[in-house]
Image 1 (cartoon, rainbow, N blue to C red):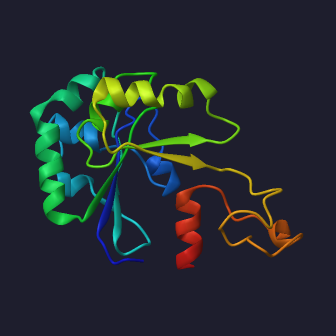
Image 2: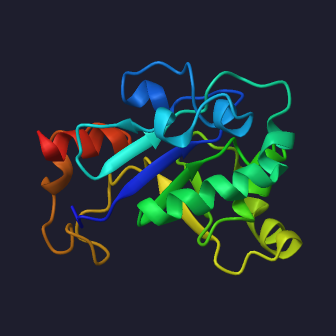
Length: 185
């Protein structure tokens, strides 16, 4: 909506899912760019949203961490910075594999997203350690999929002062891609 050019990179090469949100295949992408099998232009996929593109993870390589540490990854980011205003990078869950931390170190603003009622509480407890260990000074945390039940009449959001029944409306589809699609349709 801001007219900024945005690209999403799927760097969860072990369990790629960004392509599924857009209903496309994952036959080429980040992994094939980094081994120089495909060019960036060949792997950019356009969406129904004119200013939103993405690059899927590509076939699962035997060595995702090594590919990310390769200087070609930095070259890929530099090339994309020339074409796009915002680069969103989807990583594997931090703490399960090292890939997430390696990628977060390259981000201007690393986002640590936890899902209410799903993510393990230990992930939240480790945020301060994660920040200290990796010298993340701009790490932001997002609580996703939190229920607003019982919050009517409290806080500073839309529910402030509206009383009972405000949140009884149908709940919107879950997930950022669903919300984006809903807005443009």
